[in-house]
Length: 342
Image 1: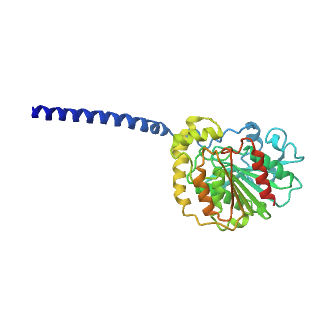
Image 2: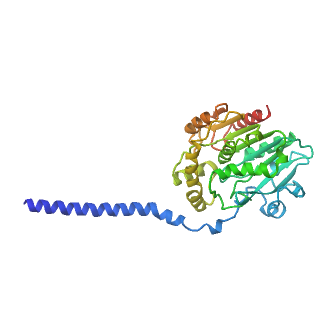
Image 3: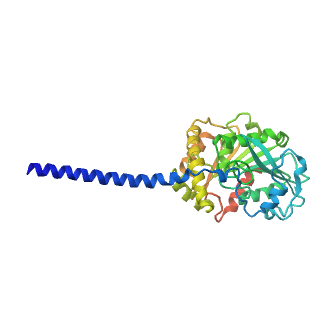
């Protein structure tokens, strides 16, 4: 009888181990299969810009983009085909677009101004998978061009008309390098009063640039909209789910590939570096968070920014989302305007 008991126990253990192995194989196949799919080369995505939103792509590609930004002959009168909604109320507004070199790529910048423009410059930096036509940027373009500012919008690497793998980045530090490289490429633009506004990853780019003591004298004011030190979703699928809710869904397979292979690994590397950044207290900074932000881990990011920017003004808007487009967004705009113009 003891023999039968031992035999049964051994048999049970073998069956249990077999089931365990099957379960693990099933589990790993679920985890690994998406990664195998993600190993598809991104050749078709290389150097392909994001599709512009509400813009005539042919007009831009044939008329404005891919000219050296230093070439003054690329200025044109804006008609009704690009940024028209925001700038149609500004008589005589001009658009100067072109590329500048940064980290082995040709990145694109757009500058809006009039013949009355002073030596004041406002630089706007959009977020990951965003673009120059972020609604609050359109508003700031209009308001500041009307106040005789030169307004520059930078396209992140791999976004809109900038070169590089779509949405790709070799290092988050390159986002900060982009800002500094543009200033170094056209220093006359920054001989007067300069303000910077970054949204989400654009705010991170600005934060990285501010780590450079040589850059800070160029920044008279800076605004971070929905900046992050930590994202709410630390794995790819959670992040994409939250991100899609925040900015909308488009090209989801591409988004999974890009976020998995490009953005998320670089973000994790940067998070470790960001903890070592020294505090900065010599630049006036406004930091705005949104209580209902599903992309940014607001509580941790608030603590981080209060530690790294001890003199900054931090404020969290209730009932607002990652892009500050919920009801009451005008209050956010007025807050930014007041800070930049004081």
